[in-house]
Length: 58
Image (tube, rainbow, N blue to C red):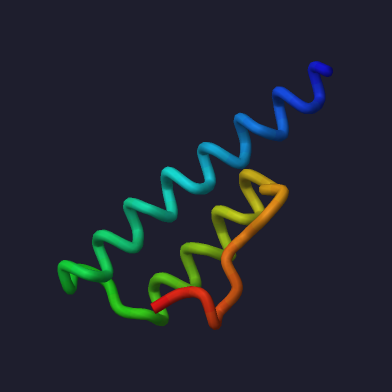
């Protein structure tokens, strides 16, 4: 059960960071290439259960 809690926490952190990154993209602070690079870095860091695919990002 502890592993499940850890997985959920990692997933939540990944989704929070990606929500912030998508907001930065919509504001024009970063471009899609930056968004894709950041997604890969955070996916490596948080090891989420589910992650965005290129087609799901703007």
